[in-house]
Amino acid sequence: MTFNSIPFLIFYPCVLLGYFGSRLLPEKIGKQARWIFLLLASYFFYMYSQPALIVLILFTTVVSWVSSLVIEKRDRLIASGTLSEKEIARAKRQKKWCLALTLLSSLGVLFFFKYFIFICESVFGIVGLFTGQAYRINLNLILPVGISFYTFQTLSYAIDVYRGMIRAERHFGYYALFVSFFPQLVAGPIERPANLLPQLRTRLPVTREDVGYGLRKMMLGFFKKIAVADLLSVYVNAIYNNLDGMETIPALGVILSTLLFAVQIYCDFSGYTDIAIGCARIMGIRLMKNFDRPYTAKTIREFWGRWHISLSTWFRDYLYIPLGGSRCAKWRHLLNITIVFLVSGLWHGAAWTFVIWGALHALYQVIGILTLPVRNRLLTKIGLSPDGRVIRAIRTFNTFLLVDFAWLFFRANSTSDLGKLLSALFTGANWRVPFANVLSLMQLNVPAILLLVLSIVLLLLVDRLILHHDEPAGDGAFVSRFAFVAVTWIVIFAWTYLMANDLTSTFIYFQF
Image (cartoon, rainbow, N blue to C red; front, side):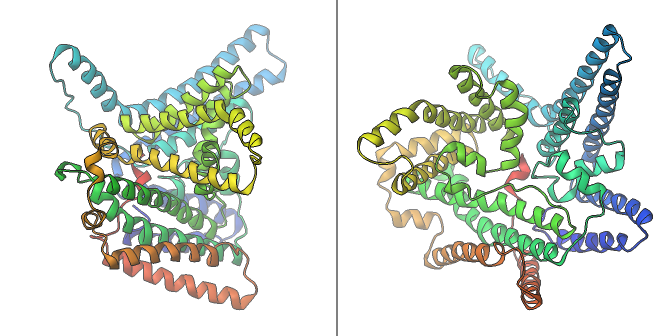
């Protein structure tokens, strides 16, 4: 089930009725009814489109839950002081084996469904270069929606228990709900157990401000997705999905569509996050922030501190720091960065285009670290402050250009398409296609351009007017804002229904 669909717009109000209905029951009964209802609702949400694949969530949930309980039990035995040195060594080995079981089972499921065919095809391609024969694997696997997200969530839980950072959750129902909580199940944010689990266990107060903020956040997310991202996808796809039918791929078309894709993917992914955060907030549950104006970043490192924050911090805490982080020799520090971004690229998709995209971001960071002292000295020599307003603006602009160029690799449908796109940028004939022809090819006529500009301007206004002011300034303001989001909800419902077979599409990050 997707957020931008009629079933969800019916499903979610029903969930709210059941959720708030359980809060009217006596505390002991209501607490039990609450987690059962939310867990069943979350499983229904996932099973709506892929019923059989709920088995995978159940499998990773059970294995990580049992393993973590055993890990904590061994920790208590070690801390009791009653074990001999030999028994302590055995208990530590058992802890490691339990963690390894969780890692192997969760990552094994992820590898099989997401990467097995990719690895086989890559190996067959290399073998074919030497033998001259074409090898193919006849195996059709369905990529489970959200598998990368809930896998990382279970891994963070098991690792945190192993490190002694949190206590193992003894109640299976609450832990299963942590893994499958429907707002963030299929595309994040990738929540940490220390943040989400306590909220699921507690009857949190739901204030008027929570409801107002949650509704406004959802409206912003729907607007980003339907009015901006889905609209932009038409013009981006006109280039990226039709390369084979073009005699000459216009270089200006590649540039324009890639610039538009930068806006599309931001609105698509942050739109999903906004809806997820809003859904949870209305129930009094606060999910972590996942985006923070990423295109205002002045460096690639800062960009990744603002884009998909839950994933960036996950890689920092569970891969980068264990590898040694920056507290090591410079060459090792740069290698650690490269490894993290290669893994990040592979996490995003089982294709070489994503691996190259990750490698490109690693290269950006490595070059940035190596050249930073030289760049700062040059700026000082010519009398400019490295932190001056002009230099910050230039750095922001340069960072956006680098990120946008990397999006070309991310968006390309295949390595073959990637080669065509890059060739178009560096071939003179491709630059001679008139800009008017480019606009025609992308279906960008005057009304379309006006609608596009209006949508982006409205996005900025809506973001500023209905979201930045979290607390209402009195009852009148609350009523007016509630009326605004109610009307917006009706408009979005109608828009989704009318455009169901036209503009609306699934969220981009569902494929990861």
